[in-house]
Image (cartoon, rainbow, N blue to C red; front, side):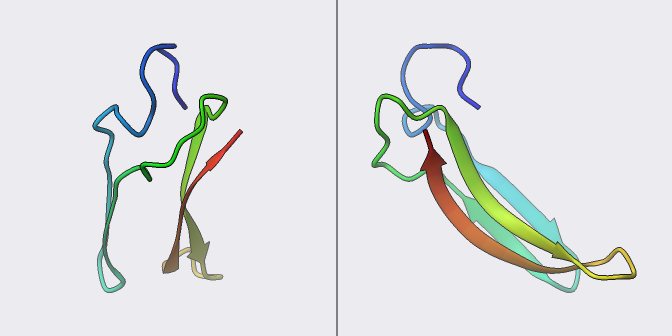
Length: 65
C-alpha cells in the first residue's frame, strides 16, 4: 500500500522480486498508468499445491482503488 500521501506507487521506485526454486524468478515494477485514487498495487497471485509447494505465479500487475 501507499502510505506517505505524496507521489504515487508508480513513481516510488518500488520493485517486487520473487525467486522460487524450480518454478522461476519474477520481477515486477508498478505500471505507469496510476490514478490519483489508487492506493494498492496488486502484484501477483501464487498457487500452492496440497504439499505446500508453490506451483505457479500468475502476474496481475494492476491497481485497486
